[in-house]
Length: 288
Image 1 (tube, rainbow, N blue to C red):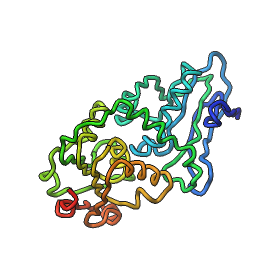
Image 2: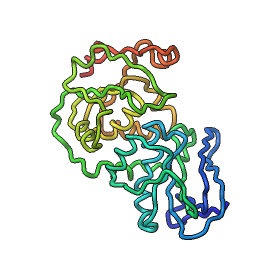
Image 3: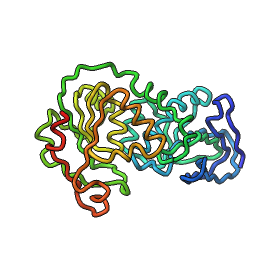
């Protein structure tokens, strides 16, 4: 396997020649994330690929903060490798929203030979090692993501973002019963209907109070929010168990007020029993 490190990128990437297929293996108790690569020979002009997807690419929040997080690095690399394409495992609407928002068109779902595949030093939200914090480019990513997002008038008193129903990761999926919450809100927005990410960002930034689901909805929409009160329906520990989610939580909290509300039965029990977790307005009303 012919691997080299690009020192001018501060050892942030690996270059591998003639890759036939890629696989991602993550070990929580291991200090590094491992790429398993198979090399074969090829001839002719090289194709260039940037492989950013992990084993969690089918989970929205994981994909944003483990894969899309490397978009700024992609722009930097593309200056040196103009034909560089982002290598993907499968299409998802949430991926297209971010590609369109960042103006990225060079995508590929297959590897052609001969090639040079560039891998970032992967990160994983469930990693327990603090060393991942030093190479988690959150601020750089957010500066690109929100560069066209001015501070907006808070003209939406209460914005409710129900849990989306499309493209949810199967192993993380759950059912929520919001009971009477919608009737007490000013606006209900179904993120499944988003076609332009900037529109969703602007909507979130206009809200005084935002009610949403824990997990990816909080992690992503929370990054959009500014000077808002965010009421999170779900588990606080989910966002404070590992170093990277803690850093993300702290970033959101630095710009907003955050409150967590647990449902009935508690979500871990509801998910295990495959029954809805019920959230009622009476448990939220004192925070609005």
